[in-house]
Image 1 (cartoon, rainbow, N blue to C red):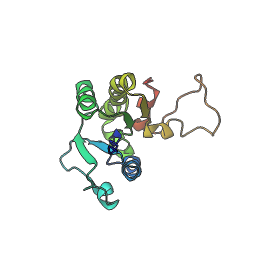
Image 2 (spheres, rainbow, N blue to C red):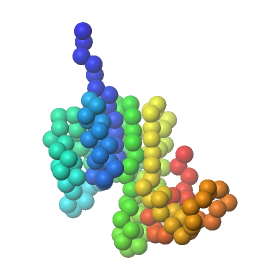
Image 3 (cartoon, one colour):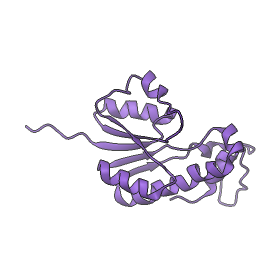
Image 4 (tube, rainbow, N blue to C red):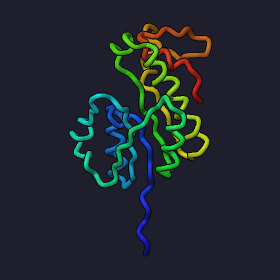
Length: 165
């Protein structure tokens, strides 16, 4: 009997809380995980190190630029992933006030750049935007409609009004 080939998955935003825990879960289920991270002056992998998965043989860390559409296409081609979970966003509220344009590029345009090639090529594509929870922070909880007034509590929520599928 031939050994089964592990399913492969791309997780954008692996250094965030949701990305790190999803990575841990999928590795425990036998997945080959391609976790993307953004290049910065000091890359921060403390979450995956704390979870004890940083050196896992099925974890491959890949530098990835959400704001570059070509980067998404190359990532898809080089990994052969069959599932993608887009969890990447610039969701630090303080930074979003200091750098609103960068926040919009990463959290809004970045999600669109990720969605377009992945959604058309991968049967199981999931995208979430962590900033959505801040979209209507000044509103009482009730069912939202398209006519509902958008009242962002921070610049991290502004890109959430962009249509990305």
